[in-house]
Structure formats: structure tokens, C-alpha cells
Length: 209
Image (tube, rainbow, N blue to C red; front, side, top):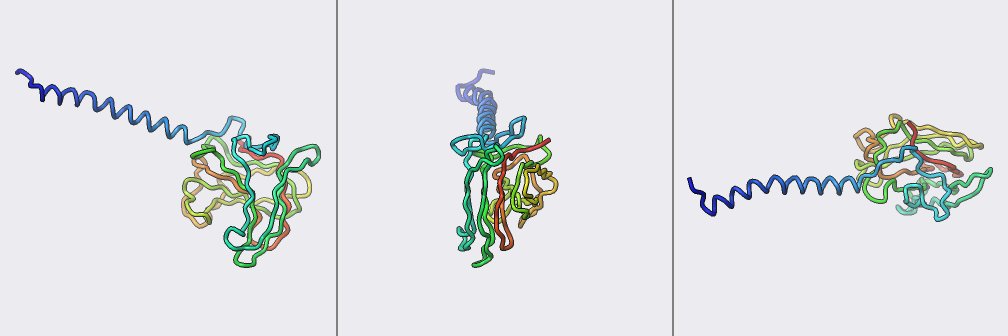
């Protein structure tokens, strides 16, 4: 049977369409890979050695208080050298007035997209403070509202010590899904929930196996 020009065009289209679909899929995979970072093998997020204040991930630390929602808590963030170690310190006063009640320093874990920490067991800190209990909050692709987070608490004693917080111990706050460490977006160190004097210094933060 002799093929017409229309038949030949349809045949060529059927042959090329799968290749186009494959090309589109590869392009999408490349974009997703670029947006989804993977934690370094050593797991270190920051040791605060950078003069420009950026973390090892290339992202800056930020100070946030409940004043963004009308509260009156106050805080400051600064770098200090303590016992020869450069550290990030958060100091301030947490007030429950005007439905407030928190101060925090936080860090995006990827310049864009998400961070995959699935190869690790949890988060580690080298911390000291004023003997108060603080929270470590994680945000993921599942935390779409500002009040949602995954939370674990720790005590910051008066001398340096390492704190290890397994991912399995993080509790969902005002959301249902369990923490997925392959989809991390942000980490926050928080004084929250009661009137207190905040004084927390961190010499290292990272993931551990």
C-alpha cells in the first residue's frame, strides 16, 4: 500500500512525540534537582566562621519576633566570641502581651527550594545559654501556614554542650503529617510560649547520622 503525504506526517509525529515527552521529562527533572538541595556529607549547617554572616549553605540568619503579629517581645541577634569560639547569640525578653510570646533566629536551609537531609538521623547543636528551655523548629514543604512547624525542645545550660534532636522526636504543631526530613525548608531557634529572658548562643548547628 502506498502511503500518502498525510500518512507519512502522522507516522513521523508518532515517532517524534515520545522523544519530545522524554526531553520534557528530563528538563523537569533537571529543574527539580536544582531546586532540591542535598545536605553535605558532614552535615554541618553553620559554624559561624563566615565574616559576612552567611551560613555554610549560603543563606543568612534572620531575627524575628512576635512584633510581626502585634506582640511586644523584643530581641537582638549578634555574633560573639565566647571561649575562643565565634557564636550566634539571641538575647531578649519574651512577653505574652497582645497575644504574642516568641522571639527567634531562623535560617532558610536552601537558597531556593528544599533540602534533603534524609541521610541523617537528626539535628545537632553546640549550645549554651541561661538554663532555660528553648525550641528548635523545622519547616518543610508541608508547613504552608506561618503557625505550622515541627518542634523539639532542649535546655541551654550555662556551659557549652552538644544537643542532639532526632527527627523522630519532632512533634507536628497544627498540622497532621509526620516530619519528612527529605523536604526541609527552614530551621528556627526559638524562645516561645511563656514570659522569659532569652539568652541563647549557638557555636555549631548541623545534622548528625
